[in-house]
Length: 114
Image (cartoon, rainbow, N blue to C red; front, top):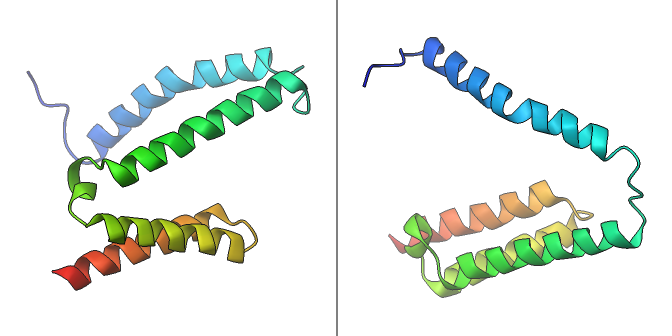
């Protein structure tokens, strides 16, 4: 196997491959979805299923963590999750701040336990 290059060459190749693989599907989805009623029953059902899948994956990561997330104890993971949810609602449903606060609690708790 040969080297792809280094530095900017590798980054440019990866970016180009990602764009070529991703963008046609985005444009096709934009074209096909232009007449979808976002307030319709079907779209609401799809949104509910997607939300349930994400919630299930989050719970799975909390209860049965894989990789580095398995290091901190369950009580710390649950505390970080609770802090993130509380921040989400405290900061006017800001997803970014909720994720940031939960991450900070998990990282700070992990360092404190060392």
